[in-house]
Structure formats: C-alpha cells, structure tokens
Length: 72
Image (cartoon, rainbow, N blue to C red):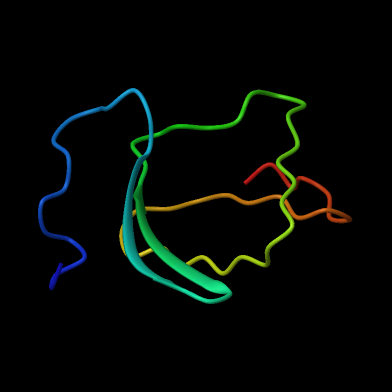
C-alpha cells in the first residue's frame, strides 16, 4: 500500500477494517478504518502491548486508564 487513504471502504461498515502494513519482531503497524464504531459503555479494552495512534482524518476519543472522561 502506497497511500494510506487509498482503497478506503465506502459508506458505513459494521466493523472496523484492519489492514496490516508491517509486521516485525516486537512491532506491528496497521491501518484501522473506523466509521463510527465504539466500545459499549463500561467496556475496558486491555492489552499487553503499547499502542500509538494517529488520526489522519476525522476525530477519535480515547480514554486512558487513570484519566476521567471529559465528555468531549
């Protein structure tokens, strides 16, 4: 994939679309396309790996453990 914004799904899709871009020892890079998906209230996603997120278009909300939801 040369352009991260190429071949995007059209319209609303039921689930996030995850495309692996790079896999190596101790690192994974994915393009994740969301069209409004969200975790259910009270759900807490926990993982062993560190995560770094960049939003190229649109907006996102992340609640980090130890922080309070500011209702943005």
